[in-house]
Picture 1 (tube, rainbow over the protein chains, first blue to last red):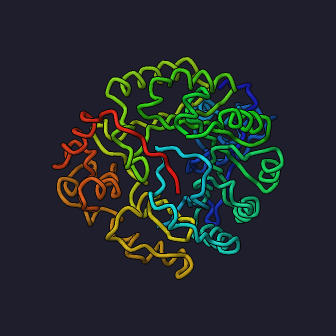
Picture 2: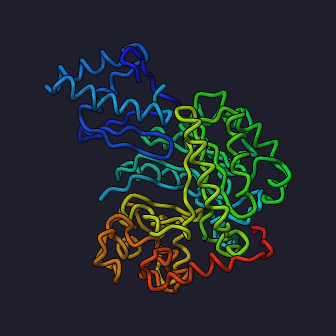
Length: 87
Length: 352
């Protein structure tokens, strides 16, 4: 996914917050358990923010190396969009 | 340990007669269906136990007049809701009602990519109705999966099924090789695909995945009798999944009622959480303690979980045996001979 893309969730894709603070991405017939940076990134998806802005916000909040965040989150967003969970 | 997924088999009634159905042969024994209030209690309790997904299936779940109320109750409890249907009753009014009640995802099955073969398999001509339902769901704000169960009669049409899905702009296609339980077990000799069909199917799917990358996700579930290792059935017995049958029995796997020496409990008699945590039926094959060799010392024991208990029972008479689908099983010859000896046999239509 391009850094300037403005992702939004596909049909039937939603984030779930559990009482213990953990988060999952619920998709048709499945659930993906999210680590805190991934959860934070997906929470910022609104169809307006760019992938670049989302990554920058996660870097600021979690004190991770920018390149590392860009690789990991870029990979996550690519996989989700290939499966049609992000458009 | 927390259950994640609840399969609600609302009814085993169905207007189709597919011989590959995994429902039990004794369909009449399940006519005493749970009332609405009891299903709602089950859904609410499941959410409290940590379940995140509710699947409404059957039989044909849209034959329950209270389906919208059940979807609504699940959704209000925070559950993601899946409807698994053959689509023939999914008109505008019902679909809108379900979506208004929070339905997240619809899976519609077809029997074949064209009407004639579909009718031969389903025993009735409903192909056009299914097409209507697919178009209706596509236009609405709900996720859609097209499902086609593959077996010897339709295995050579995979390419056409994919083209059919493309024509409808389907983004998620599930090609599920038949699993041999219930009616499908009864009909296994006639449904078993040939090795040639399975290998060609793999090639067709691989090419289509490449071509449709990003546009359509194709899920291809390999036939169990053709792999080297068994499927990790239910990701382990009593680990993530619960099924409630139309009359309230709680099963670790939708096919588990076949295991005749295991006693299952009913939500009319005992709370769902009690059954999940403390029943003999959920505990007996949970984890790895029950495993015989070669599973016990196998490095794949927490990958495959010994395969499928129901299949082990059906094929060997012992639910604790290694799944004969595993190439390391002492009983693997049962599967290879079924595979090789699959011959033309008359299909027996599913009916009550």
